Length: 179
Image 1: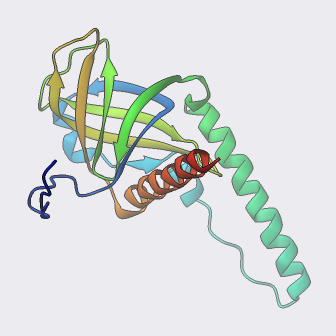
Image 2 (image 1 turned 180 degrees about the horizontal axis):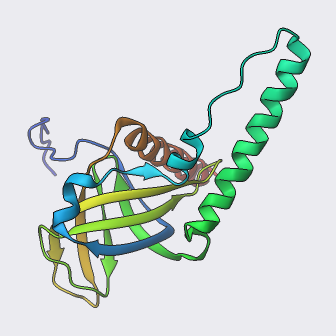
């Protein structure tokens, strides 16, 4: 065994990754749509249409309205997740991080293909995401194709949610190992 110094230039990964089973659905989309793509959480556009209520002078009423508003937002979020088809996705083993993911697939994708990836991050508060990625590598089937995807059209909020998920999952794995 030799001691090797690993520098930042040796490590190609910018973000930590975790291997886990999560609900996922993947489909290829036209490359022409690339400019209109935007990764998002399920229900983003629907909830953005509502303006926040003005704050009443009475603090008790303000707290009640805030509580009711939070509950309604959660109900709308859960209904949107169901409407978008997140409740019936297959569990898939993925290796995911803030920059991309890899997964095994029966379908053969080509490097450069653009994929729409619907997935549910199963954290304390589940989060349904629409992600887009460009296929960067496809390994020969054994028995399935190992496909590596680099996320594109992803904003900081969505990337941060993935990073939080990775760290929460890693923390849970460490807790289980200690038991």
